[in-house]
Image (cartoon, rainbow, N blue to C red):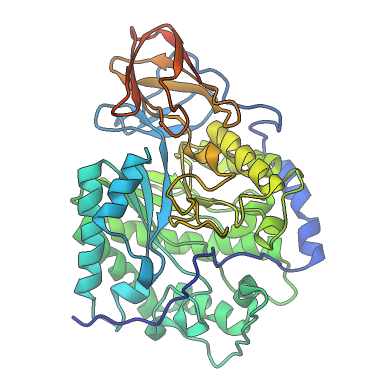
Length: 490
């Protein structure tokens, strides 16, 4: 089958930067909405409360839930996984190789949110590009070998290439002749163009486009579900929709989430489950969650659904240095209600800053990592690339943490046998602490040489720790039910 696709941008920025959204009236509603959510932490807390003993496994053993709410996906040994890694491969010119996957694993990352796009899977209606399927297969093959868990992210930005972006193919783009005027100064404003909003409406409402989107997921799930590395599928990146006349952003987002997007997820869940009953399926809200507004997605009848919101600061995306405002605490207060109510693991699908080298943005990275230690069971930073010039590249030119991103490259509990508790890493001092209620098997902590050039000073209560310098790991064993606390110091 033929290989075809529109040219992609050559820069490696997150192209949804600059959320100059809607109107002042809409933004004025945000604090009220955020205040309605039950807070899950405070700005000064640095870790989850310690776990309490007691049954926490799901009926099928696929998850472990901590007493304070977060849900962890388990591995084949029943251990609670913490997933940390990258977003990667959005552009044609930076598709992944096996060497990239090996590099991620060598850095200690066990997670990849692999960006894939409908326009490349099915460039012509009903004509699937076998070369692109083979490419995704090759990435999963490499991840199988390296022990990296992969989420396939069906990505879109401003709907698709008809609007100079990426996502849905041209043949699946219907605008009814409505206008589209590109805003080169603020990419995200293009979402509000009449033609773009109407394209989303047709995708949600037209029977033939619904069927095509469902069949796409049947093809994708049927092809890839046999891979050991396949964690699951992110059904739709940053979904959007069409506003009604005089409807503000907050009201529109709630309506679209509870109707159009939820209806789409129902259809796509059924499509995936027709061929794959085992993999996880991940759902995203609209980007308004970044303002601290809880999602209005419905509840879905499937036992293996995860929540995959994004975690971006608008002012920082527009080029500013974080001021230390209440962005993180508002986000944290709003984000956990939906997954907690539905017993869903929460994996932050995207987060990061366009320039981690400035003082405020470096502080934001540290604050976000600390927050995610409390409310999430995993995350993937935007973006897998190297640069000494800033941008969203998470690494410097040598492949280490870009200055300011060090908190994201530190030690973490990759697999906990038992019930996870508190965890926190201070990149400035190198101090790391984790606590948990032990289960029957060994637990594993990633201990990177980039943080501890020499063997770390290890203190442990409630168990025994064995340090393997070659593998950069600590293996912890303990009597089931024991309260384990581990600290590492330089």
